[in-house]
Image 1 (spheres, one colour):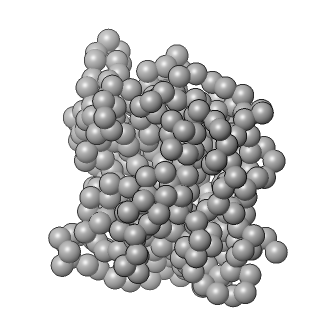
Image 2: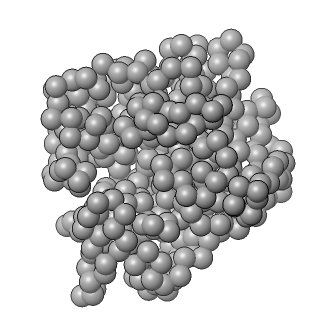
Image 3: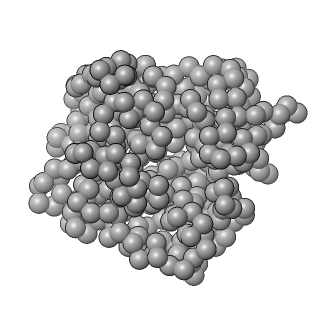
Amino acid sequence: MPLSIPVSETGAAGDPGHKRYTLRNAHDMRVTISDRGATLISWWAPDRYGRVADVLLGHPDAAGYAGNAQYFGATVGRWANRIAAGRFSLDGADYLLDRNDGANHLHGGDTGFHQALWTAHPGDDGSLRFTLDSPDGDGGYPGNLQVEVVYRLGDDGALRIDYQAVCDAPTPVNLTSHGYFNLNGGSADIGDHQLFIDADHYLPVDAGLIPVGVAAVAGSAFDFRAPAPIGPRLVWPEPQLAQAGGFDHCYCLRPAAQGGDKVLREVARVYDPGSGRQLAVATTEAGLQFYSGNFLAGVPGRDGLPYAKHDGFCLEAEAWPNQINGPDAAAVVLRPGQVYRQTTIYTLALKD
């Protein structure tokens, strides 16, 4: 798998460290990644007619990624998703985090990993490794954290993302990739996309999108155990959808572990009948956040056109939102001598 480094570098838009690297496979599928936020910028792939398009949403220039309020394609941390009231307690100490989502903490705070300048280490094997040192107090989190993210693109269209982290003091860690996908390449919204999620339960949320319990998907708009188009589900008379403006909920995946070890397994698929493209998601994580692009309206996009609501979707593999404040908090605390590991694989292929 050849790797070209870098394919472009921009600084005129106020982001002098913004370098982009491209992974290519034997079929000339291309994935472009930036060192700003270890961010997925583009994923170019053919449809059933051989027409190549970018299946990722993104900002039109480097300046957009310097802020990246939508987290387009970013590596998110230290904590993916929300922490209620921006607070948690650990080993008898209370911690106050950045409150950047109303009263809550979201995606690592005001200066989360999505805005950081990561160090790129291209590998001879075609991999691309990024490293980041997150200092004690970063976003309000305790301890120094050393983080690594490795991208690999296979000839089968599998983009493998391996995460690793170590610390010198106990700290919550929950990393994810926040890519926005549109498998038709942006020719329409995601309404025709057919979604499958292997989960019997999801987490209902309050007005601040903080989980308030666990609910069965059966009989609700959240049941994607059989593939179903996203568009019709968005207009179901479901209070949870009305509250979130669409889907912005975590699914409780199964099984999350065997014998104490995380298990990599396929948990979701999305198929676009117009293009023939299918995205499969495999992960080691316990949760999968399905977000239907509810806040995309008016966000500047590529080709000079703004995005509209539901122009893209996210499937973010992660721990459960606010888990650090729940009964299973110990599972998301990294301690000195331990290694945080997470693997998620997005596989893009033609179904027919």
